[in-house]
Length: 210
Image (cartoon, rainbow, N blue to C red; front, side, top):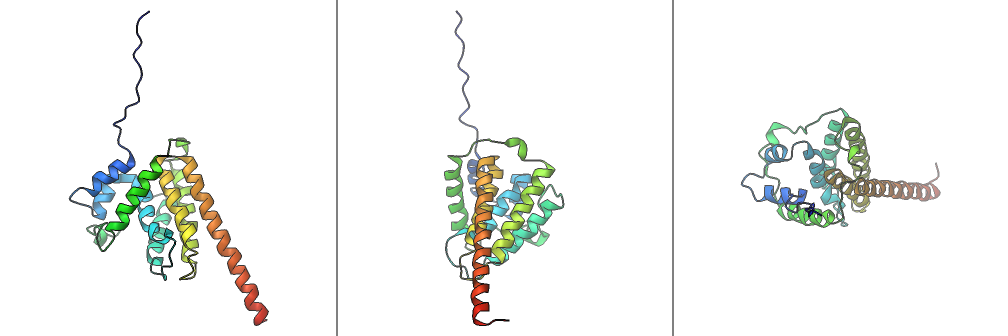
């Protein structure tokens, strides 16, 4: 009986974390370089970078609302059907790791590599087409709005922002399980905001009835 060769899965296929690490080690880490290197994946990666500061469980005093608003604008681009991320030309030469962002980006890389241990290509047919991009943009829009509406110093923007980060990683990994986890976190975060907001309104009206 002839010997049948074993079919081996190649172990040298670069992961997204490998690609990101290689890009960070390059000479050009500008926004223009990010758009060129990652192509249509730039949307999801931009959402990860923009929403990560808000996802940290610390009060930000509203400083990160600017980043959340930019994420909201990028999400609208997905909703209107853009395939490639557009940014103003004057931003093209801005460094992603500049202005104190280096530690954050490298911390994100470690988090991405940790998530990759659990990521698998699951439900890949849901990603990479117009309808999937529109749904992705809508969900990011909801998460960004939820983070924006959170009062400063309350930390209520943490869960919606974290949900957007996880959802975007699910899109990058083409893993519907991770993406679904991100959707759940967004929903929980927004639900908590609504419940606390309603409770505060009830307390306020009990003291100052209208």
